[in-house]
Length: 487
Image (tube, rainbow, N blue to C red; front, side, top):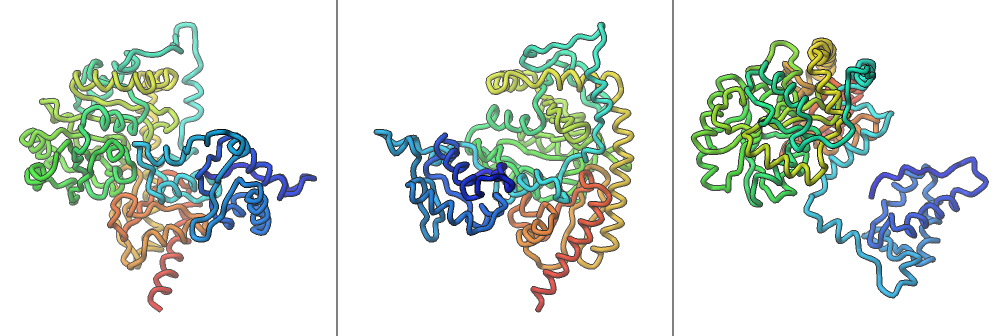
């Protein structure tokens, strides 16, 4: 059940009990809350409605008396009917069973909790993987949409592969990274996540295996799993993903492709070495395993530029390259791209047209303007300085408050510090304790279900004051929990 946004008016002449009862009846009668849906606990409902638990008990008893709900010990309260359902000759559809039968798997529960908590403006977000609102270029973005008579903006659909002007500009931008890609081999997508969705449904058979680094961002989403794929992790070392077992694993599994984030890996921050990149290309060609290169963090280097992308070493069309503006410019633009062989790009473009008929023309216009006018390069210089300052500030805080309880490596770019706890503490419990104190963290189990030692900390979103207050409080929670376990 989704978070309840409505709240009763406490200064109303209508009692809280009556307001909540009327609200819940309306939800049921209009089919927004369907038969079979389970309600949150009484305590949770009281918290969401901001009332006493006794008020909720009275509301549920009234709705149960009306025949709309039923409470069973051990299974909670469920909706069992609605007013028009009581009169209908045949019962309405059981939407809960439809939801459970859908092919797209729901997020793991902790990710759903993180998504809800991120909507709370009072939460200190120590794990959020995006730029802080104060770092986003609002002024220049407003200037982007100030037109003169020489400019033209299409408000219609674009061609299947996306705006021709943007694809040409992206082609020139990628050439600076050593990637030679014509506009015909570029598909504009609505962010990196859509790129993965298109690849999952457009290129692979059900039952295929996706190799990836362990830990991996892929484990925090269900794009490939919902399409019937299996994920198989490969170990990481300081040079990136290891692949000495790929040949053997390929024989044991229905190998599909290998997914990797070589630049400032999510969540570990590791940068794949140039030697490892060249070796990986050679192995992929020998074993005939295509590579998805996710390079959404590539422009966010803080010390020195990373080695050239894998795609720059690919002369046989083995690598599908994903880029995006979501991490480096603005998540709200929802613009990215896939680069690959023309036959693949054409096929994916056809699928995209069947799903959304093209990415936003306004966003495509904005990104083309930022790239072609050099604004993006200027912005990157400033944002690198800001992120470098935040990273170093966070590192000093960790030295001061975490040296005795954790280890970490200073990242060379991106957003993340992969913190390894020295103490044996359940990261799930730590997540819950921190959340109660208004601190949102991303535990290691999000990226590897067996990892109970790591936290992914982000220095890109929280303010300096929030970073300091949040990390001090988090250290205190960890130490308090460690003492509790010891004694």
